[in-house]
Structure formats: C-alpha cells, structure tokens
Length: 363
Image (cartoon, rainbow, N blue to C red):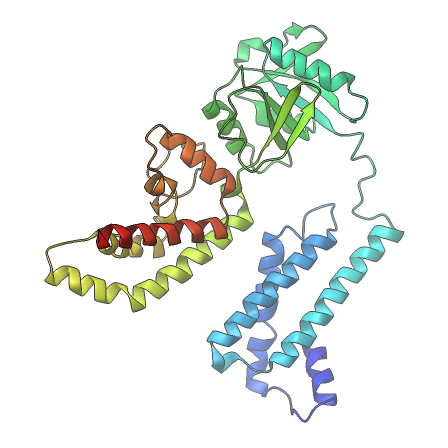
C-alpha cells in the first residue's frame, strides 16, 4: 500500500493519504487479504500453491473494493488499491514460482509413489475392486488394505489383502498409512455409513470414491472413472468445504441484513394488522433466525439426526420445498444439495421459491 501510494503520487497530482488515516490503510486491507488467503489454504504447510494465491488475491480485491464502494468515507483512492493489488499478485506469486522451479520448495516429488488406497468393504465386490486396482498398470496405486465394518474384522486375511481397520478407526488408519484415496464398496455399505466416514474425515487430504450399484442420486455432477467394468464415482460434499461455508455465511448475512432493514419491518407491520399470514410473510418473518446464524436461507428441511454428518443448517427453503415428487426421499434431496451446494445454486433455489410463493398467491 505504501509503495502504491508513492507510485500514484509520482505520476499524478494526488497529494497522498491523510496522516490520521494510515492506521486504517495499513491494517484493514492486510487483515482482509490474510484472512482470505488463510481460508484459501495459501499458508498450507509444505506447499506453495500459486493458483491458491491468485484466487486469494482476486477474492480479497473484490471484497475490499466492495467495502470501499459501500463505505464511501473509507474509499480513499481506488487507483492506489488497483496498483497495490497489482504489486501484491506479482510479488506474492514471483517468489513462490522461483522457489518451486529452482529450489523445488513445496514440490513433493514422491507424490505419485505415495498414492495409497484403502478399499472399504470385505465382500467379493470389494476384493474385486482391490484386485482390479492392483493389476491396473496405468495407475500408480498402492493398496494399503481393506477396511471392515466391525472391529472384529481387523487382521483378517482376504485373498492377498489384509483388513487393517474398521469403520470405527478409519480416520486413524488414514493418518497412519498416509492414505490419499478411499474407495467404498456400496454393496457392503449404505449411504449413511459412507457419508459418516466422509464427514468424520473431511479435514483429511483424501479423495473419496464409490464403486458399486444404486448410485442414481449421488452421481449428480460428479466425474466417473471406469475401472474396466467397475465404475468409480468421486464423492465430495461442497457443504463441508471451509471456503464455501464462509461464502454461504457471508451471503446469508448480507441478504438477511438487507431484508431485515428494508422488507422485514413492513411485513411485520402487515402481519400484525392482518390475521392472514401468507407463505411469503412467514418466510420473511423467519429471516432473523438466518441473521443470527441458527438457520440458512437454503438448506435441509430438518436437521440431520446423525450429528456426525453435516448436511448444512436448517433452511427456510430448499429442494424439499420445490420438489413435488413424493417418490423422492427427503434424505436423497438433502444429500444432493449438500454435495452440489454453491452460491449460484442457493440463488437459483431462492428465486424459484419466491416465484412459487407468488404463483400460489396469484392462484
């Protein structure tokens, strides 16, 4: 910021910042960027990610310029902001690139050789998957072992594979054996059991995949890789992502405060004067629970009874409100939303919900 200020003073008629403002100028933008960079995992140990750094700079730039737009008393010079972020993206990327290219810092040469896989299941299908992976020459996978359903399965030998853990201690096994990939046999486990494992291990650097049948709902928007005749479906749940949770909370808070100040008072007054409470009014009157963080605008209809699986905060709306097909189970809709959640999906669901409320009102 100091360098950007000096550059702009040199090439313009601007006199620079006022002295009392320096404490804000040299702290707030820096804190915003450091927070965003931390959430984007720029400061991950033993890693120097240039792409994550680019992402953090872009997001913090958008956030800072938005703040200066809404709080004009702190706008200062937008030219200085542009120059400072140009300097920031060049400087923070340059030394990372130099260290990675010339000194191999943050580059894990043995990543390929350390690709270790766990197969969750002990039935014939699980063993078939393990054998296929072991014999596939195009992939550098090392099968660490199998995971049994129960603790009593540990140490059993099934063909050439050993059961090295159970569902109860799978997180410990992942850390101990430095596992990078976990493959579920869906013929051996149900949705709830698989999602419990994913939820418990969401902070581990592991890719989760499913092999088997009955994947009609979880498949949505995933990539499918074929292992000869065995499909492997990647499992990732957006709702558990730290960065997406942060963005979702900012969205809920921003929209909630807007509604609370500009719409809520009128609806509250109308509701008090009129005994008839429409669906739209009930929706607006529930917004304070979103602002305080108890609920979210979009989420599951009810909180999941299994606390180990995070499906998101209870929502004022969601697929459960839009879906008219009674054959589709609520649990499947919640899984689908949790897996594919992003800010654009939330906006789409909100728009469709409001449209449905007004359509019903007109009828």
